[in-house]
Length: 156
Image 1: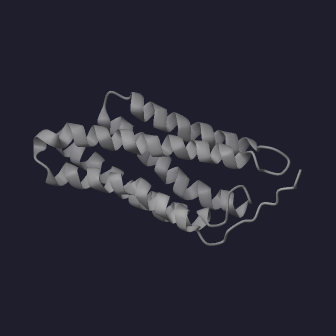
Image 2 (image 1 turned 30 degrees about the vertical axis):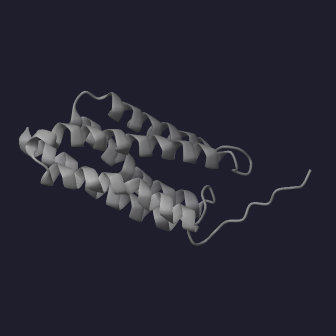
Image 3 (image 1 turned 45 degrees about the vertical axis):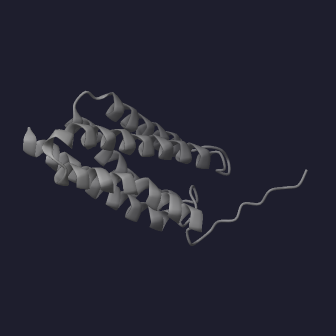
């Protein structure tokens, strides 16, 4: 059997950029819809924003878990803690009957990813390009989630 050697891309591969942007576009649409659509649409737009935002967070928890499998010497406790935090934040946001706490959990999750992925990249726990891609991606997501939260808070 041939030995596999991992290579680490410094620049984001095209598909990573494509999927990274595509993951955030629906949040942009939901945030815009919350402010531009008639008020009757607000509950649906916010609910879809929470579901999409949580799905992305839960997916990224899986990405973090997958990356931990390739860590020399085995998975580190910080990797498991990050994965569990992201998964639980997304799951609890989905389970929340109230939009404001759900959005707050997502905001905390996205904010933590913007900080933790660059740290993981510096420690060799994630590809180097994630250290540059994730903060930008999560900042856009954060702005969208904040826009949704602000809209929800204005009608409360």
